[in-house]
Image (cartoon, rainbow over all chains, first blue to last red; front, side, top):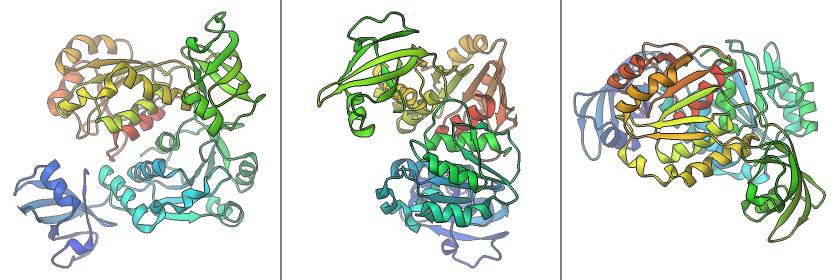
Length: 245
Length: 245
Protein backbone atom coordinates (compact mmCIF):
# COMPACT_ATOMS: atom_id res chain seq x y z
CA UNK A 1 0.00 0.00 0.00
CA UNK A 2 2.11 2.86 -1.32
CA UNK A 3 -0.98 5.02 -1.66
CA UNK A 4 -3.93 5.18 0.73
CA UNK A 5 -7.00 5.08 -1.51
CA UNK A 6 -9.90 7.23 -0.30
CA UNK A 7 -13.58 6.94 -1.18
CA UNK A 8 -16.13 9.73 -1.16
CA UNK A 9 -17.77 8.17 1.90
CA UNK A 10 -14.59 8.69 3.92
CA UNK A 11 -14.98 12.47 3.83
CA UNK A 12 -16.68 14.12 6.76
CA UNK A 13 -17.32 17.25 4.70
CA UNK A 14 -18.33 17.22 1.03
CA UNK A 15 -15.54 17.46 -1.55
CA UNK A 16 -15.27 20.65 -3.58
CA UNK A 17 -14.51 18.73 -6.78
CA UNK A 18 -13.19 15.24 -7.45
CA UNK A 19 -10.10 16.63 -9.23
CA UNK A 20 -8.83 19.23 -6.80
CA UNK A 21 -10.04 19.31 -3.29
CA UNK A 22 -9.24 19.30 0.38
CA UNK A 23 -11.08 17.85 3.30
CA UNK A 24 -11.00 15.65 6.35
CA UNK A 25 -11.33 11.87 6.22
CA UNK A 26 -11.93 9.29 8.92
CA UNK A 27 -10.62 5.78 8.25
CA UNK A 28 -11.60 2.61 10.12
CA UNK A 29 -10.75 -0.44 8.04
CA UNK A 30 -7.53 -2.06 6.81
CA UNK A 31 -6.25 1.39 5.93
CA UNK A 32 -6.27 2.27 9.64
CA UNK A 33 -4.36 -0.94 10.39
CA UNK A 34 -1.85 -0.15 7.67
CA UNK A 35 -1.26 3.42 8.87
CA UNK A 36 -0.76 2.17 12.42
CA UNK A 37 1.17 -1.08 11.93
CA UNK A 38 3.07 -0.67 8.67
CA UNK A 39 3.63 3.07 8.36
CA UNK A 40 3.79 3.36 12.16
CA UNK A 41 2.66 6.93 11.54
CA UNK A 42 2.36 9.54 14.26
CA UNK A 43 0.10 12.61 14.33
CA UNK A 44 1.68 15.25 12.11
CA UNK A 45 3.09 12.75 9.58
CA UNK A 46 2.28 13.17 5.89
CA UNK A 47 0.94 10.15 3.99
CA UNK A 48 0.39 9.70 0.28
CA UNK A 49 -3.34 9.53 -0.53
CA UNK A 50 -5.59 9.48 -3.58
CA UNK A 51 -9.32 9.60 -4.22
CA UNK A 52 -10.69 6.64 -6.18
CA UNK A 53 -11.12 7.84 -9.78
CA UNK A 54 -9.88 11.27 -8.68
CA UNK A 55 -6.73 13.20 -7.81
CA UNK A 56 -3.79 12.22 -5.59
CA UNK A 57 -2.09 14.25 -2.91
CA UNK A 58 -1.05 14.09 0.70
CA UNK A 59 -2.83 13.59 3.97
CA UNK A 60 -1.63 14.87 7.31
CA UNK A 61 -2.43 12.54 10.16
CA UNK A 62 -4.40 14.58 12.72
CA UNK A 63 -5.16 11.82 15.18
CA UNK A 64 -4.84 8.07 15.49
CA UNK A 65 -6.56 5.66 17.85
CA UNK A 66 -7.38 1.95 17.95
CA UNK A 67 -10.58 2.69 16.09
CA UNK A 68 -9.95 5.62 13.79
CA UNK A 69 -7.38 7.60 11.85
CA UNK A 70 -8.28 11.20 11.01
CA UNK A 71 -6.43 12.88 8.15
CA UNK A 72 -6.55 16.34 6.62
CA UNK A 73 -6.03 15.70 2.90
CA UNK A 74 -5.19 17.88 -0.07
CA UNK A 75 -5.67 16.40 -3.51
CA UNK A 76 -3.87 18.32 -6.24
CA UNK A 77 -2.04 15.85 -8.52
CA UNK A 78 -3.53 13.87 -11.39
CA UNK A 79 -3.01 10.09 -11.32
CA UNK A 80 -0.42 8.62 -13.73
CA UNK A 81 -1.61 8.27 -17.33
CA UNK A 82 -3.44 5.05 -18.23
CA UNK A 83 -1.96 2.62 -20.74
CA UNK A 84 -3.61 3.09 -24.16
CA UNK A 85 -4.51 -0.57 -24.04
CA UNK A 86 -7.38 -2.99 -24.26
CA UNK A 87 -6.16 -6.19 -22.61
CA UNK A 88 -7.98 -9.42 -23.37
CA UNK A 89 -7.22 -12.45 -21.22
CA UNK A 90 -8.53 -15.97 -21.48
CA UNK A 91 -9.84 -16.28 -17.92
CA UNK A 92 -6.93 -17.61 -15.80
CA UNK A 93 -7.41 -20.05 -12.93
CA UNK A 94 -8.47 -18.13 -9.82
CA UNK A 95 -5.20 -18.18 -7.84
CA UNK A 96 -3.24 -16.85 -10.77
CA UNK A 97 -6.04 -14.52 -11.78
CA UNK A 98 -5.91 -12.67 -8.44
CA UNK A 99 -2.26 -11.83 -8.92
CA UNK A 100 -2.70 -11.05 -12.60
CA UNK A 101 -5.52 -8.60 -11.80
CA UNK A 102 -3.37 -6.76 -9.28
CA UNK A 103 -0.34 -6.79 -11.59
CA UNK A 104 -2.37 -5.47 -14.53
CA UNK A 105 -3.92 -2.74 -12.39
CA UNK A 106 -0.49 -1.79 -11.02
CA UNK A 107 0.84 -1.37 -14.55
CA UNK A 108 -1.92 0.97 -15.68
CA UNK A 109 -4.33 -1.35 -17.51
CA UNK A 110 -7.78 0.31 -17.52
CA UNK A 111 -9.74 -1.82 -19.97
CA UNK A 112 -9.71 -5.55 -19.28
CA UNK A 113 -11.79 -8.20 -21.04
CA UNK A 114 -11.98 -11.73 -19.69
CA UNK A 115 -13.01 -14.25 -22.28
CA UNK A 116 -13.65 -17.93 -22.57
CA UNK A 117 -11.45 -20.37 -24.47
CA UNK A 118 -11.45 -24.13 -25.00
CA UNK A 119 -8.71 -24.50 -22.37
CA UNK A 120 -10.46 -22.36 -19.71
CA UNK A 121 -11.91 -24.70 -17.12
CA UNK A 122 -15.66 -24.09 -16.83
CA UNK A 123 -15.43 -23.93 -13.04
CA UNK A 124 -13.34 -20.74 -13.24
CA UNK A 125 -16.44 -18.80 -14.31
CA UNK A 126 -18.07 -19.63 -10.98
CA UNK A 127 -15.27 -18.09 -8.91
CA UNK A 128 -16.33 -15.40 -6.40
CA UNK A 129 -13.39 -13.41 -7.79
CA UNK A 130 -15.59 -12.55 -10.76
CA UNK A 131 -18.17 -10.71 -8.68
CA UNK A 132 -17.93 -6.94 -8.64
CA UNK A 133 -16.58 -7.04 -5.06
CA UNK A 134 -14.06 -9.78 -5.89
CA UNK A 135 -12.65 -7.96 -8.90
CA UNK A 136 -12.60 -4.65 -7.07
CA UNK A 137 -10.63 -6.01 -4.11
CA UNK A 138 -7.69 -7.12 -6.25
CA UNK A 139 -7.81 -4.13 -8.58
CA UNK A 140 -7.63 -1.79 -5.57
CA UNK A 141 -4.55 -3.68 -4.32
CA UNK A 142 -2.88 -2.97 -7.65
CA UNK A 143 -3.80 0.72 -7.54
CA UNK A 144 -2.57 1.08 -3.95
CA UNK A 145 0.69 -0.62 -4.91
CA UNK A 146 1.36 1.52 -7.98
CA UNK A 147 0.00 4.86 -6.67
CA UNK A 148 -2.88 5.20 -9.08
CA UNK A 149 -6.56 6.01 -8.54
CA UNK A 150 -8.34 5.07 -11.77
CA UNK A 151 -10.26 1.84 -11.32
CA UNK A 152 -9.97 -0.44 -14.38
CA UNK A 153 -13.14 -1.50 -16.20
CA UNK A 154 -13.61 -5.25 -16.44
CA UNK A 155 -15.81 -6.98 -19.02
CA UNK A 156 -16.73 -10.66 -18.82
CA UNK A 157 -17.48 -12.63 -21.98
CA UNK A 158 -18.37 -16.24 -21.31
CA UNK A 159 -18.85 -17.13 -24.97
CA UNK A 160 -15.82 -17.02 -27.24
CA UNK A 161 -17.41 -16.99 -30.68
CA UNK A 162 -19.95 -14.17 -30.28
CA UNK A 163 -17.28 -12.01 -28.63
CA UNK A 164 -14.70 -12.62 -31.34
CA UNK A 165 -17.14 -12.27 -34.22
CA UNK A 166 -19.39 -9.46 -32.99
CA UNK A 167 -17.31 -7.28 -30.65
CA UNK A 168 -13.62 -7.85 -31.31
CA UNK A 169 -13.37 -6.42 -34.86
CA UNK A 170 -14.74 -3.10 -33.55
CA UNK A 171 -12.32 -3.11 -30.59
CA UNK A 172 -9.41 -3.61 -33.04
CA UNK A 173 -10.36 -0.84 -35.45
CA UNK A 174 -7.69 1.82 -36.05
CA UNK A 175 -5.10 0.49 -33.61
CA UNK A 176 -2.42 -2.17 -33.40
CA UNK A 177 -4.03 -5.46 -32.42
CA UNK A 178 -1.77 -8.23 -31.17
CA UNK A 179 -2.10 -11.82 -30.08
CA UNK A 180 0.59 -13.19 -27.74
CA UNK A 181 1.20 -16.56 -29.35
CA UNK A 182 4.51 -18.33 -29.76
CA UNK A 183 3.89 -19.99 -33.15
CA UNK A 184 4.01 -18.42 -36.64
CA UNK A 185 4.52 -15.10 -34.90
CA UNK A 186 6.60 -11.95 -35.36
CA UNK A 187 8.80 -10.71 -32.52
CA UNK A 188 6.82 -8.44 -30.20
CA UNK A 189 7.15 -4.83 -31.45
CA UNK A 190 9.07 -2.36 -29.32
CA UNK A 191 7.81 0.28 -26.95
CA UNK A 192 5.55 3.09 -28.15
CA UNK A 193 2.52 4.92 -26.84
CA UNK A 194 0.37 3.68 -29.71
CA UNK A 195 -3.19 2.59 -28.94
CA UNK A 196 -3.07 -1.20 -28.69
CA UNK A 197 -5.24 -4.25 -28.20
CA UNK A 198 -3.47 -7.33 -26.81
CA UNK A 199 -4.91 -10.80 -26.30
CA UNK A 200 -3.24 -13.45 -24.12
CA UNK A 201 -4.36 -17.07 -24.13
CA UNK A 202 -4.94 -19.62 -21.35
CA UNK A 203 -2.43 -22.11 -19.93
CA UNK A 204 -1.68 -24.36 -22.89
CA UNK A 205 -2.57 -21.56 -25.32
CA UNK A 206 -5.52 -20.83 -27.60
CA UNK A 207 -6.38 -23.83 -29.79
CA UNK A 208 -5.81 -23.50 -33.57
CA UNK A 209 -9.50 -22.73 -34.27
CA UNK A 210 -9.39 -19.88 -31.75
CA UNK A 211 -6.15 -18.50 -33.17
CA UNK A 212 -7.72 -18.55 -36.62
CA UNK A 213 -10.78 -16.64 -35.38
CA UNK A 214 -8.64 -14.08 -33.54
CA UNK A 215 -6.52 -13.51 -36.64
CA UNK A 216 -9.68 -13.15 -38.75
CA UNK A 217 -10.88 -10.49 -36.31
CA UNK A 218 -7.70 -8.51 -36.99
CA UNK A 219 -5.07 -9.67 -34.48
CA UNK A 220 -1.44 -10.36 -35.46
CA UNK A 221 0.49 -13.06 -33.58
CA UNK A 222 3.60 -11.85 -31.75
CA UNK A 223 6.07 -13.65 -29.50
CA UNK A 224 8.60 -12.78 -26.80
CA UNK A 225 11.09 -15.53 -27.62
CA UNK A 226 10.96 -19.29 -27.11
CA UNK A 227 10.10 -19.31 -23.41
CA UNK A 228 6.56 -20.10 -22.26
CA UNK A 229 5.56 -17.72 -19.48
CA UNK A 230 2.76 -17.93 -16.95
CA UNK A 231 0.09 -15.32 -17.55
CA UNK A 232 1.07 -13.41 -14.39
CA UNK A 233 4.62 -13.12 -15.80
CA UNK A 234 3.58 -12.63 -19.42
CA UNK A 235 1.36 -9.63 -18.64
CA UNK A 236 4.11 -7.42 -17.16
CA UNK A 237 6.66 -8.70 -19.69
CA UNK A 238 4.44 -7.88 -22.68
CA UNK A 239 3.20 -4.52 -21.36
CA UNK A 240 6.70 -3.40 -20.52
CA UNK A 241 7.84 -4.35 -24.01
CA UNK A 242 4.92 -2.64 -25.76
CA UNK A 243 4.64 0.70 -23.94
CA UNK A 244 7.03 3.50 -23.09
CA UNK A 245 5.42 4.30 -19.69
CA UNK B 1 4.88 -28.11 -16.49
CA UNK B 2 5.46 -27.54 -20.19
CA UNK B 3 8.65 -29.56 -20.05
CA UNK B 4 9.26 -32.71 -18.02
CA UNK B 5 12.65 -32.21 -16.41
CA UNK B 6 14.76 -35.34 -16.14
CA UNK B 7 17.66 -36.06 -13.81
CA UNK B 8 20.54 -38.46 -14.45
CA UNK B 9 19.15 -40.79 -11.78
CA UNK B 10 15.97 -41.28 -13.81
CA UNK B 11 17.85 -43.14 -16.55
CA UNK B 12 17.89 -46.91 -16.37
CA UNK B 13 20.86 -47.05 -18.74
CA UNK B 14 23.77 -44.60 -18.66
CA UNK B 15 23.59 -41.57 -20.91
CA UNK B 16 25.95 -41.35 -23.83
CA UNK B 17 26.59 -37.62 -23.28
CA UNK B 18 24.66 -34.90 -21.45
CA UNK B 19 24.20 -32.92 -24.69
CA UNK B 20 22.95 -35.50 -27.15
CA UNK B 21 21.67 -38.80 -25.94
CA UNK B 22 18.90 -41.30 -25.84
CA UNK B 23 17.75 -43.66 -23.19
CA UNK B 24 14.93 -44.98 -21.06
CA UNK B 25 13.69 -43.22 -17.94
CA UNK B 26 11.37 -44.36 -15.16
CA UNK B 27 9.45 -41.64 -13.32
CA UNK B 28 7.66 -42.01 -9.98
CA UNK B 29 7.10 -38.61 -8.42
CA UNK B 30 4.98 -35.55 -9.28
CA UNK B 31 6.09 -35.95 -12.91
CA UNK B 32 4.21 -39.25 -13.02
CA UNK B 33 1.13 -37.55 -11.56
CA UNK B 34 1.42 -34.76 -14.12
CA UNK B 35 1.77 -37.14 -17.09
CA UNK B 36 -1.25 -39.10 -15.88
CA UNK B 37 -3.61 -36.39 -14.59
CA UNK B 38 -2.74 -33.26 -16.56
CA UNK B 39 -1.37 -34.54 -19.89
CA UNK B 40 -3.68 -37.57 -19.61
CA UNK B 41 -1.07 -39.23 -21.80
CA UNK B 42 -1.45 -42.70 -23.26
CA UNK B 43 1.31 -45.13 -24.27
CA UNK B 44 2.68 -43.99 -27.62
CA UNK B 45 2.25 -40.26 -26.89
CA UNK B 46 5.22 -37.92 -27.27
CA UNK B 47 6.02 -35.58 -24.38
CA UNK B 48 8.49 -32.71 -24.25
CA UNK B 49 11.41 -33.55 -21.97
CA UNK B 50 14.78 -32.07 -21.00
CA UNK B 51 17.75 -33.18 -18.92
CA UNK B 52 18.65 -30.84 -16.06
CA UNK B 53 21.63 -28.77 -17.27
CA UNK B 54 21.52 -30.71 -20.54
CA UNK B 55 19.66 -31.01 -23.83
CA UNK B 56 15.93 -31.05 -24.53
CA UNK B 57 13.98 -33.40 -26.77
CA UNK B 58 11.02 -35.71 -26.72
CA UNK B 59 10.00 -38.75 -24.78
CA UNK B 60 7.68 -41.45 -26.02
CA UNK B 61 5.53 -42.91 -23.29
CA UNK B 62 6.14 -46.67 -23.32
CA UNK B 63 4.01 -47.62 -20.33
CA UNK B 64 2.06 -45.95 -17.56
CA UNK B 65 0.77 -47.37 -14.29
CA UNK B 66 -0.26 -46.05 -10.87
CA UNK B 67 3.36 -46.26 -9.79
CA UNK B 68 5.55 -45.59 -12.79
CA UNK B 69 5.82 -43.96 -16.18
CA UNK B 70 8.42 -45.37 -18.57
CA UNK B 71 9.61 -43.16 -21.43
CA UNK B 72 12.06 -43.65 -24.26
CA UNK B 73 13.69 -40.24 -24.62
CA UNK B 74 15.83 -38.61 -27.29
CA UNK B 75 17.64 -35.42 -26.35
CA UNK B 76 18.89 -33.46 -29.33
CA UNK B 77 18.03 -29.76 -28.87
CA UNK B 78 19.97 -27.21 -26.82
CA UNK B 79 17.99 -25.27 -24.18
CA UNK B 80 17.11 -21.63 -24.97
CA UNK B 81 19.97 -19.15 -24.50
CA UNK B 82 20.41 -17.69 -21.00
CA UNK B 83 19.94 -13.99 -20.38
CA UNK B 84 23.33 -12.23 -20.25
CA UNK B 85 22.35 -10.96 -16.82
CA UNK B 86 23.44 -10.83 -13.22
CA UNK B 87 20.28 -10.10 -11.22
CA UNK B 88 20.65 -8.73 -7.70
CA UNK B 89 17.54 -8.68 -5.49
CA UNK B 90 17.14 -7.36 -2.00
CA UNK B 91 15.72 -10.53 -0.42
CA UNK B 92 11.92 -10.36 -0.86
CA UNK B 93 9.48 -11.64 1.76
CA UNK B 94 9.11 -15.41 1.36
CA UNK B 95 5.68 -15.57 -0.29
CA UNK B 96 6.66 -13.10 -2.95
CA UNK B 97 10.15 -14.57 -3.22
CA UNK B 98 8.79 -17.99 -4.25
CA UNK B 99 6.97 -16.50 -7.20
CA UNK B 100 9.83 -14.20 -8.07
CA UNK B 101 12.26 -17.13 -8.14
CA UNK B 102 10.04 -19.08 -10.52
CA UNK B 103 9.38 -16.00 -12.69
CA UNK B 104 13.10 -15.17 -12.92
CA UNK B 105 13.96 -18.77 -13.79
CA UNK B 106 11.21 -18.86 -16.41
CA UNK B 107 12.62 -15.74 -18.07
CA UNK B 108 16.16 -17.12 -18.38
CA UNK B 109 17.93 -15.59 -15.36
CA UNK B 110 20.96 -17.79 -14.56
CA UNK B 111 22.91 -15.69 -12.06
CA UNK B 112 20.92 -14.45 -9.07
CA UNK B 113 22.31 -12.70 -6.01
CA UNK B 114 20.13 -12.18 -2.93
CA UNK B 115 21.38 -9.41 -0.73
CA UNK B 116 20.46 -7.71 2.50
CA UNK B 117 19.13 -4.17 2.79
CA UNK B 118 17.89 -1.99 5.63
CA UNK B 119 14.28 -2.75 4.65
CA UNK B 120 14.72 -6.53 4.43
CA UNK B 121 13.15 -8.06 7.53
CA UNK B 122 15.79 -10.12 9.37
CA UNK B 123 13.38 -13.07 9.68
CA UNK B 124 13.40 -13.55 5.89
CA UNK B 125 16.96 -14.88 6.09
CA UNK B 126 15.70 -17.79 8.22
CA UNK B 127 13.17 -18.96 5.62
CA UNK B 128 13.47 -22.62 4.52
CA UNK B 129 13.15 -21.25 0.99
CA UNK B 130 16.80 -20.26 1.21
CA UNK B 131 18.05 -23.82 1.66
CA UNK B 132 19.42 -25.52 -1.42
CA UNK B 133 16.29 -27.70 -1.63
CA UNK B 134 13.95 -24.72 -1.16
CA UNK B 135 15.58 -22.65 -3.87
CA UNK B 136 15.81 -25.61 -6.22
CA UNK B 137 12.10 -26.45 -5.92
CA UNK B 138 10.96 -23.05 -7.17
CA UNK B 139 13.70 -22.69 -9.77
CA UNK B 140 12.71 -26.07 -11.26
CA UNK B 141 9.08 -24.88 -11.48
CA UNK B 142 10.29 -21.92 -13.53
CA UNK B 143 12.36 -24.13 -15.85
CA UNK B 144 9.49 -26.59 -16.34
CA UNK B 145 7.17 -23.68 -17.15
CA UNK B 146 9.46 -22.02 -19.67
CA UNK B 147 10.97 -25.18 -21.25
CA UNK B 148 14.53 -24.65 -20.13
CA UNK B 149 17.03 -26.99 -18.44
CA UNK B 150 19.82 -24.76 -17.09
CA UNK B 151 19.50 -24.39 -13.32
CA UNK B 152 20.23 -20.81 -12.18
CA UNK B 153 23.03 -20.20 -9.69
CA UNK B 154 21.92 -18.43 -6.51
CA UNK B 155 24.28 -16.53 -4.21
CA UNK B 156 23.26 -15.34 -0.74
CA UNK B 157 24.88 -12.26 0.78
CA UNK B 158 23.58 -11.44 4.24
CA UNK B 159 25.76 -8.36 4.68
CA UNK B 160 25.15 -5.40 2.42
CA UNK B 161 28.32 -3.39 2.86
CA UNK B 162 30.97 -6.08 2.27
CA UNK B 163 29.06 -7.28 -0.80
CA UNK B 164 28.70 -3.81 -2.29
CA UNK B 165 32.26 -2.75 -1.51
CA UNK B 166 34.19 -5.95 -2.15
CA UNK B 167 32.27 -7.93 -4.76
CA UNK B 168 29.93 -5.63 -6.66
CA UNK B 169 32.52 -3.44 -8.46
CA UNK B 170 34.03 -6.56 -10.01
CA UNK B 171 30.58 -7.88 -11.05
CA UNK B 172 29.90 -4.54 -12.78
CA UNK B 173 33.16 -4.36 -14.70
CA UNK B 174 32.82 -4.03 -18.49
CA UNK B 175 29.03 -4.23 -18.69
CA UNK B 176 25.98 -2.05 -18.22
CA UNK B 177 25.13 -1.92 -14.53
CA UNK B 178 21.68 -0.65 -13.56
CA UNK B 179 19.75 0.05 -10.39
CA UNK B 180 15.94 -0.01 -10.63
CA UNK B 181 15.11 3.07 -8.60
CA UNK B 182 12.39 5.61 -9.30
CA UNK B 183 14.19 8.76 -8.13
CA UNK B 184 16.89 10.79 -9.94
CA UNK B 185 16.86 8.09 -12.57
CA UNK B 186 17.03 7.82 -16.36
CA UNK B 187 14.33 5.94 -18.27
CA UNK B 188 15.20 2.25 -18.50
CA UNK B 189 17.24 1.66 -21.69
CA UNK B 190 15.66 -0.36 -24.47
CA UNK B 191 16.15 -3.98 -25.41
CA UNK B 192 19.57 -5.31 -26.39
CA UNK B 193 21.58 -8.44 -25.79
CA UNK B 194 24.29 -6.52 -23.93
CA UNK B 195 25.77 -8.08 -20.80
CA UNK B 196 23.97 -6.43 -17.88
CA UNK B 197 23.87 -6.28 -14.12
CA UNK B 198 20.56 -5.18 -12.60
CA UNK B 199 19.78 -4.53 -8.93
CA UNK B 200 16.22 -4.30 -7.55
CA UNK B 201 15.48 -3.04 -4.06
CA UNK B 202 13.14 -4.26 -1.31
CA UNK B 203 9.53 -3.15 -0.67
CA UNK B 204 9.90 0.51 0.18
CA UNK B 205 13.15 0.73 -1.82
CA UNK B 206 16.82 0.93 -0.94
CA UNK B 207 17.51 3.69 1.62
CA UNK B 208 19.56 6.72 0.46
CA UNK B 209 22.79 5.38 2.00
CA UNK B 210 22.37 2.13 0.07
CA UNK B 211 21.60 3.92 -3.18
CA UNK B 212 24.76 5.98 -2.70
CA UNK B 213 26.86 2.85 -2.14
CA UNK B 214 25.35 1.10 -5.16
CA UNK B 215 26.04 4.13 -7.36
CA UNK B 216 29.62 4.29 -6.02
CA UNK B 217 30.03 0.63 -7.01
CA UNK B 218 29.13 1.57 -10.60
CA UNK B 219 25.32 1.24 -10.92
CA UNK B 220 23.18 3.83 -12.73
CA UNK B 221 19.61 4.43 -11.52
CA UNK B 222 16.89 3.72 -14.11
CA UNK B 223 13.10 3.85 -13.86
CA UNK B 224 10.12 2.36 -15.69
CA UNK B 225 7.80 5.32 -15.17
CA UNK B 226 6.01 6.65 -12.11
CA UNK B 227 4.33 3.41 -11.02
CA UNK B 228 5.71 1.43 -8.09
CA UNK B 229 5.68 -2.27 -8.92
CA UNK B 230 5.94 -5.30 -6.68
CA UNK B 231 9.19 -7.16 -7.18
CA UNK B 232 7.40 -10.11 -8.80
CA UNK B 233 5.97 -7.69 -11.40
CA UNK B 234 9.09 -5.52 -11.67
CA UNK B 235 11.35 -8.47 -12.55
CA UNK B 236 9.49 -9.52 -15.73
CA UNK B 237 8.79 -5.88 -16.65
CA UNK B 238 12.45 -4.85 -16.38
CA UNK B 239 13.87 -7.98 -18.04
CA UNK B 240 11.46 -7.71 -20.92
CA UNK B 241 12.43 -4.07 -21.40
CA UNK B 242 16.18 -4.73 -21.21
CA UNK B 243 16.64 -7.83 -23.37
CA UNK B 244 15.67 -8.83 -26.89
CA UNK B 245 15.00 -12.52 -26.04
